[in-house]
Image 1: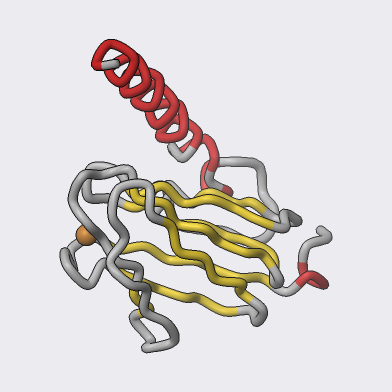
Image 2 (image 1 turned 60 degrees about the vertical axis):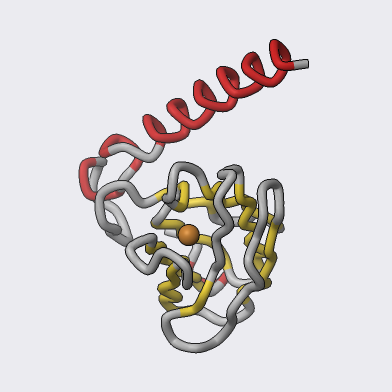
Length: 138
Ligand SMILES: [Cu+2]
């Protein structure tokens, strides 16, 4: 059982590293060919999905900067052994404390920038940027 758990942890770490690489400079509009719109380094753009997952791992939101289409359900899942929360910096929502494997979901219906943080560890920060469906096309 312990062996399986450590294998799982290794796989999870590899997956998170891959995600971190994807979230690197090459994924941002800023370093790519000219085109609209430009987002800060590390932004992960995931337009046209019904649901997108954000992992809470090692006291960080992954990806911390996410761009989704209006109507997308964003699901945060805590993989740490410490509890975390997902709290809107604009006072729009606040999750309960999420234990290990606990998750919180919110559907983002309107366009805009939605910064959030962990209420337990306020240095943990993220932003969901929501773009209207009509602005997807180049
Ligand atoms: Cu936290």
